[in-house]
Image 1 (cartoon, rainbow, N blue to C red):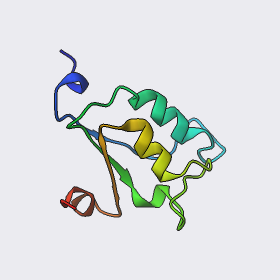
Image 2: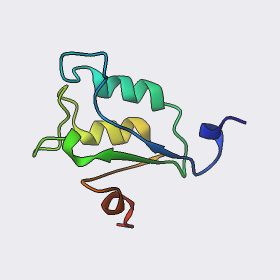
Image 3: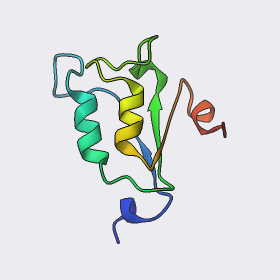
Image 4: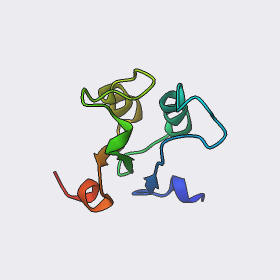
Length: 88
């Protein structure tokens, strides 16, 4: 069984594609495609810097849409990993 198929798998996401010179346009939508099979018990951590002050990613996708697209996995953000891992 691949690691990502195990219940409770923890995934780390780092914003930006080193091969892309545009700063991440369409990047979040690619994350949704890649993580679309997220399962209940999965925790997806995103750096808070990936969002602007309105909770929107660089490619105009609101955080709420990303959370809905990846449900039932839990999506958290934080400036530090310890902040993101705190139980809300």
